[in-house]
Image: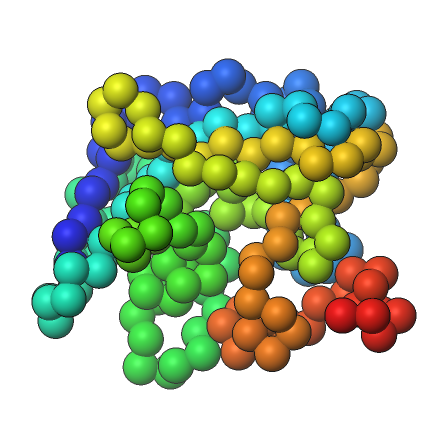
Length: 188
């Protein structure tokens, strides 16, 4: 395993959209979610964020995640540890549960890298989501995840992404069943 910790304190989110377009608050789905603070048209940049940590599977057995989290600045470590940690395996460490519960694939597909984000990890799931995301490499090669609206989002509406695991995967990996309109109506 190869790991990157971003212990410096420069802003993780540029441009800053928290408090102008979106906010993090309690979600009726449980825990925290991201909500629109104003009407948002399609193709609007909602969030552009560097990860708190990136973990790359290199095929070795040594797991550097604990050292990676310990190397974070105090505020970034607190942000990481505040994230939800669904524990599918009781022998799993809290840090590993946080990574599995909140990580997004970053970098090239073949790198098997997972990034955990302070704000983006608060996006909740919907099979028919109203936003999408993509990884973009920066000049510094660290990269950032960018989230865009894919349809009109109303004031106060929860902003969601598709976790991409299907109903069985959601229960297995995250411990919940989807409650989006399509799933409630039995269409998914």
